[in-house]
Length: 148
Image (cartoon, rainbow, N blue to C red):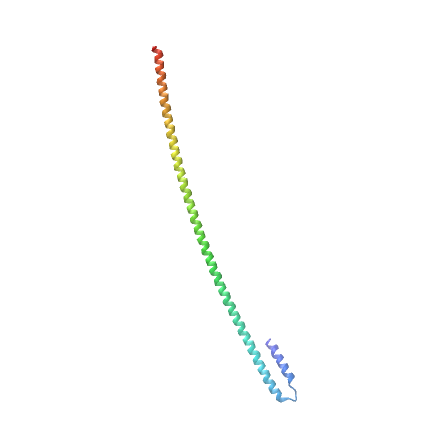
């Protein structure tokens, strides 16, 4: 690009010079030199602007990466907290279920004991009733034997 610009300026300068005009050739040389300096300054300014744009883009990308990293860290922390809370909830549910099972076992044991006591009472009462019936039958048999 720089070569094309300088070549164009050189051709333009040569078109203004002629064999008869030597004084103008010195001013044309100055014009070419001035044009070359201006072109060099323009290229340098463009390079500086491009460098500044690249620096700005790098800074913006770095800031975006930092913000993304912070967002990821926050998401990881939130997920960790949620997992901890879920674990606590599961532990609580397991403990409550264990307590419920223990209570059911205790009540079932109490019910079995009560049923056993009831069976024992029924057996005792049945035994008493059988004894009383036996005694009554013996009395009646004795009455029949003696005739009284």
